Amino acid sequence: MRQNLTPYWDDLIFSINIEQLSTKHRCEPWFKYLKVHICEHSTGNRTIIPKYPCRPGHSPSIEELLTYLLHKSKLYVEALDSTMEPHLFMMQHFKWKDSSQGLTAFLQAQDCFNSLCVLLKGTGVDVETLAIILNKQL
Image 1 (cartoon, rainbow, N blue to C red):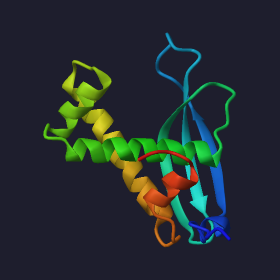
Image 2 (image 1 turned 90 degrees about the vertical axis):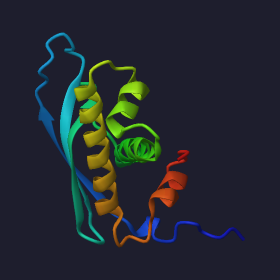
Image 3 (image 1 turned 60 degrees about the vertical axis):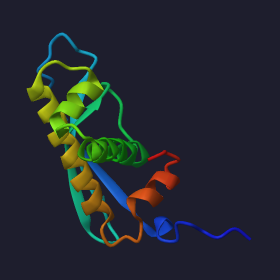
Image 4 (image 1 turned 30 degrees about the vertical axis):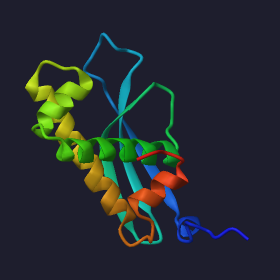
């Protein structure tokens, strides 16, 4: 008999509310941003992803959104663990030359980390367990 590593996961109920944001980049008509509200109903935890990148016509699943938050959270932790300043780590990671882009990316990753922590608080599921559930490597 296999032990269930995620006893609380099956009890979680998520809902998603999506608002389409207009893109400011006319050169990228195939690309849009969504403002995504996520609620976990067993705890009442709510969070917002203010600018989720997405293709037009695509509605992200909860697994896709949690994977996005998980990926950005991992990047945030890597930036904090780096010997470089966090914004410089982001510049190097994305191969950017503008430090303001690095700072913006770091702050967005920090927001995703905070959102994920808020969403999972009190659920009995931690970030490492979520990564296992979603089959993602931290």
